[in-house]
Image 1: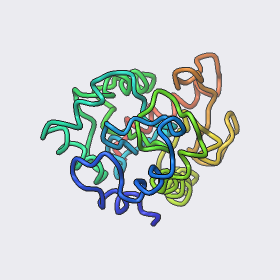
Image 2: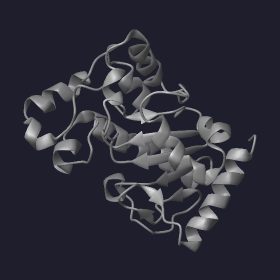
Image 3: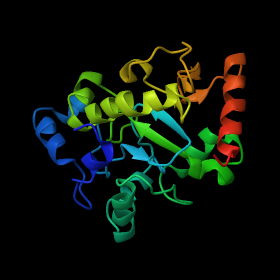
Image 4: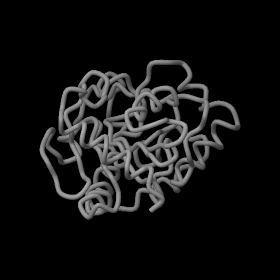
Length: 219
């Protein structure tokens, strides 16, 4: 299944594991995959269906108990159910908001532009870091993220319909860090530790200006 939205429409409200991923996890030990399965899956965030810019990452992080809070209350489960459908904007509060605004501040005032951005991860499950890439890529949800990105997002970016910026895990997405691609597809030099754009790169300066112009446009 190549449609990421159709894929995630099959998950039940409040589920911690996508149905097809459950078979993969049954064959993997917790020590091997290193993923936190107490949180709700977060393959993507923001209005992925309508975003002008999509930022590609490895997996949603886990460094705070706030990531666990959405898995219990009704409003957290409802938010994720809407989020899995694709058009749901970022919340003002909640897990990940502070981190996301620290990423997009390079492109303008986060409050003004954040609803034009989306984040897409290779893996849907929270973890401080990806412990085993082979284990992560054995999960159907990870393969759907990569396949959909390569078959849908990359062609759109190469024809400059949408800006796609690979912030982490370039090789997993099928890209090469620092290489120039056609249209508005980018795999820029980044701060590997934090996933921020490297500030001492002229190419990154041009990229920031392009993104600022694009998200400011009403097109």
